[in-house]
Image (cartoon, rainbow, N blue to C red; front, top):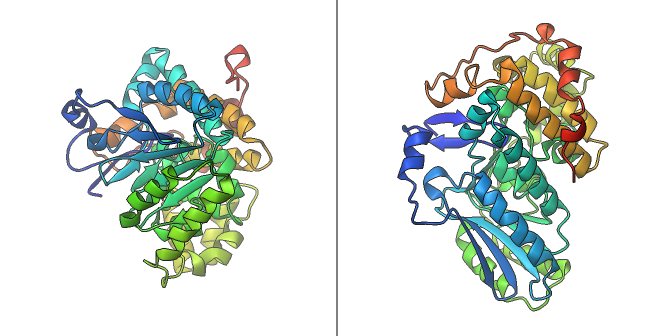
Length: 384
């Protein structure tokens, strides 16, 4: 992608030479942002904002949540399928620019968006019906939250997954603190701190997706899922397994990180971000040097918050992780280091890929400032 603009908690909108504002203006108001259909005995959620890579906004969240809860209780609904249109993205993130602007002036949108998004993430994670996310295309930020907590996640060769929030001074939210530390070894921590991108079959090999199916087979897969009669999760799994077995694209290539898995487990095994940096520098291999260079470009504050987020999240429930991440999201809205002037807007509008972090080094980030971001919000805490 020629211009990487924004990855804010649940935002990565990859734009091609034009600003998000222009794309928003181009987006037709005649078309609904979200389609919620009943097809046979399946509830089908379709994100319908292809011109902005199906970016998630508050209106969409407010439509999806009650429909998901209704389908979960409906005896006439057996499964839920979520997908995106346009061929480029499942959902590239959250429509966050308005949220960051609201945060600067104290508008309630800064609380409402995160609160209601996380409540939706939890509803997906606890859904009693088989929930199938067809992540065909860019899946980042908010798109990860709409998919990764569901029972089934189907990647294709078009899937591009990443949680690169540390690159703009934020943290991998939408339950990132829950699913990332549960990936094998230190892989989740590596992905969280470096923002490394996984593509295609590698998204499944990493454990982010449950299945890999070639993109051209997705319409047939969806049709077969919809035609299932009172399916159990095992029935859905058998169909997905069948389509995966038919999909040989990329099967002959090893996992992109396979030769580095032991290195990642060793180098990212530390009690602090500083310790990881020391490991990387001491190792001196080409891989280690590259990761050290990557981390040096990231927000020092974000790296430390993300490290603690995953460290704590490894032993917490999804609900407790979302409560923790809501606290972090609100810290992002009030602390100077997170303000759009410091990073997000520079990358969004000025296309400046070298934001000036504050604090600028890991040593300048105090433990007290990190702890403060995790502090209880009292009666304003997220309630699930």
